[in-house]
Every structure is written in C-alpha cells, then in structure tokens.
Length: 103
Image (cartoon, rainbow, N blue to C red; front, side):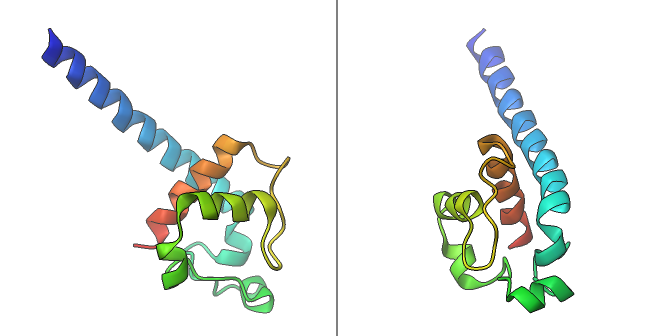
C-alpha cells in the first residue's frame, strides 16, 4: 500500500514538472524569445541592440532561481518588468524553462 502511494506521488511530481516546463516554453516563446532568442543565446537583432544576456552566461547559470524570478518580475537593466503581465506561477515556469536552455 505504501509503495503504491509513493509511486503515485512520484508520478504526480514528474507530471507536474513536465507541465511546468511545457507551459514555461510557451511563455518563453511569447514573452522572452524576441530578445533572448529561441535558444537563449540573445543573438537576435533585438537582443544584440539591448545587450540581452545569454542564458549560458556563467553569471546566469550560477544565479539562484529567486534572483532570476526577481529579474523577470521587476525588470533589470533594459529588460522590462513582467509583474502584472505574467502571474508568479508563469514567471516561475518561464525561469524553469530558461534553466533548460542553459544546458
């Protein structure tokens, strides 16, 4: 009985993580890719003009999720704030997706 419950909990966690990553990809494509590019390298014309940071930059890779969430929420340098434009859950999902681009 305990083993079945543990298996069910693990499956729920895995499925929730997959849903967040999928939602994060959609949010990223809609709100972030224009500047940061589909690959997160910031090689787009807008990204170059605004000096957007690559998600493979060591400073971004080392940054805590809370720092990235704060940057998306409040804006940073020339990046606009998404507070009020995206929900906290959407921002967290987008940051989760950004982490996949850093690999």
